[in-house]
Image (cartoon, rainbow, N blue to C red; front, side, top):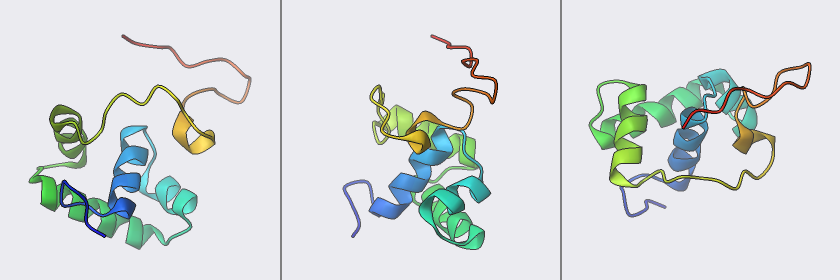
Length: 95
């Protein structure tokens, strides 16, 4: 199903994970899809948003309100790969 921004729910999830710092491979693993499929999802995100690069797509998504401030993480995937390292230290917080 295509949403208000022309992106499917699956594409939006991939975009959110990308914005949280996950790689294509990590996104594929979290969504239980092949890395090639994750790449296709993100390529379509770039196309729909008319972005030159994936970081540009993330910037456009924040600027247009597609991605808002998500201050309530739900699970490890929402926290991002750099939220805490193996020793339990927290990543630096900016802003």
